[in-house]
Image 1 (cartoon, one colour):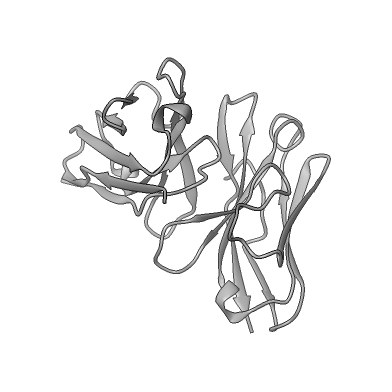
Image 2: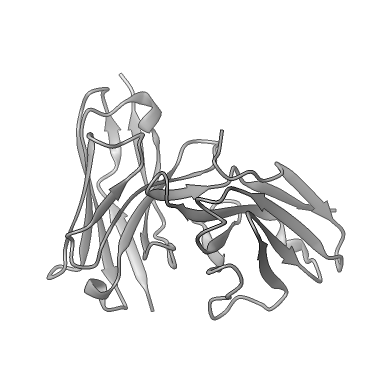
Length: 110
Length: 115
């Protein structure tokens, strides 16, 4: 059971906008920045969003992050087939004194 | 270009030990915390440990506390993870990452714990 809760799956059609939620608590999302990672089949994960809503260089602006209270969301607009991947949220947890991940969401592009 | 290259994985019996290494290049190594994360076969990501830039601050997941030790050699730009008393549930691909936020990831090294 992961400390951060994500839906196990999500789907959308090309061009559509999809959001993935991540629910936590006051000690993690409520107190610290949220990061989002993309893991395509095979390769290592890649950082998509850090500090709730910042994009590393090279990440398309189709990807955006937001946070409200103890929940965060990743939005993907203009969905493309190459976006089919697993997506994970993560945040530092002040009570556990460690990083916690969500269980991951498998995004399918129909 | 940031590059992280893990090594040291392999097959080990329960109760055994392994030391993983992560050679870093393309950034000022000593200026960044470094982390280890892992992914068991068919499972999600799990944070394992983080060490501060100077090496004097360390953090561990409860699942590895007391068995794993993270360290670094800033002169060699290398991160380490000493894993002792390994268990079957430690079987995973181990990734090193730049920073607490895992800004960049290596390609991973597979650790298999089995008799």
